[in-house]
Length: 430
Image 1 (cartoon, rainbow, N blue to C red):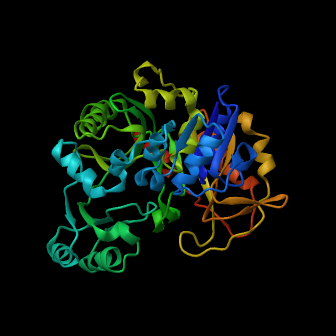
Image 2 (spheres, rainbow, N blue to C red):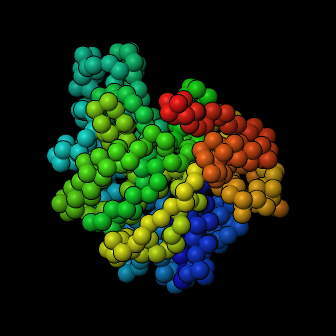
Image 3 (cartoon, one colour):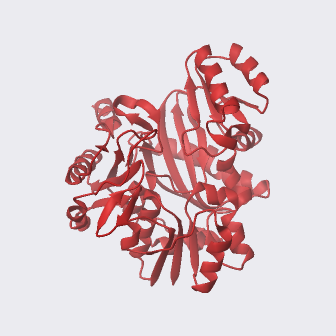
C-alpha cells in the first residue's frame, strides 16, 4: 500500500521509520518532510495546512492511508478534509482534536465527567483575568487556550509574574490567537508522566509511559521548549497507578468524548501529574508526542499500519498491542540559542556512524534538517533526536549520550541531564 505522512519533525521521521519496517508499505510519502525522512520516503513540497493540495496529491497518487501527525492540521480539520474526499486518514477529526486545541474545552470536559485534574478558571476578558491573579493562590499556572508549540504555559510564583503573564498571553499575544482565551490552573506538585494510547472511538489501548524534559537548560533551567529529551518507560508509573488511570482517566475520557458526539480516533496523549492525591490530568494531546514518539515507537512490536487501520475501522479491540521489555532514551541535539534565536545551515557530520548501528538500537531521528547538495544541514531549533535502546533505563541513557557524541555540527547544544529521574528512582528503591 501507499502511505503519506503529514509533518516535518522528529515525530514524523520516527513514524516514517516505523512504517518503513512494515511489509505492507510499498511506497512512502511525506509532506513536507525533512532531510532524514527524505532517505526513506519521497518528500513532497506541500505545507501541513494545505489540505486541498494534500487531498489532490493523495488522489493523483493513489494514497491508501494518510497519517496526520501534527497538532495544527489535526485541529484545523485535515482528517475531515480527507474523509470528505472519500480518502482514508489516521487521526482525530477536528471536533475531537479540540481536546488539544482548546485547554478550556478539555478542562470543562474533565469537570463535567469528573476526570481528575487541577482546579481552574477560564478568561476571555483581560481585566477579569487581571483581577483574578491579584488574589489567586500562588504559585499559579497560566496557559494560552490554543496551540502554542508547547510553549504557552507560564508558571508564576509571584503576583508580578502573574500580571506579566496575563499581559504576555492576552495583551501582547505572544502566542498569537492561542491567547484569545486564557486558562488559570491550580499549581500541582508531583512527578510528571506522559502516557500515549491508541483509540478507535470506544476502545483504548495504552502504549508505554514516558517522561519529557521541557526546559532548555540543565537542572530544568531556561525557557520551555518543544522538548529536549525523554525516556521510556517511567519508573514512577507503577502498576497501581496504571490501574487507577485506566479506571478514572483513560476510559472515562474516551467515553466522555463519545458521549459529547466527538468520538476520538487516533493517538491520545495524556500528560499526567502523579500527586499525593492520585494521578491528575495536566493536558491532553491529540497525536504522538515529540520527542515521546522517538522512545515509544522503536519499542513497539506491532506493525503500525495494522494499529492505525484498527483505530480507523473501530476494531482496536482485536489488536494485541505489545512492547519490548526494555527501555529507550532520546537526547535532543539543538541549535544553541533555541528556543529564541539561533542560526541554521550548518553541515551535520556523523550520521553514517549512527545509521551503521541501527541494528544495535541506535537512531538519529531528524527534526530540523534539510538536504543541501550532498550534505544534511541544520534547519531548525531542534535538529536531531538521538535515541538509543538498552536493557535498562541507565543503559539506554548511556547509549543515547554515546550516540550524541558521534554527531557534530556548529552551534550544537544539548542538555546533559536527560533522565536524571532515573537515578532518583533508583535511590528511592534502595
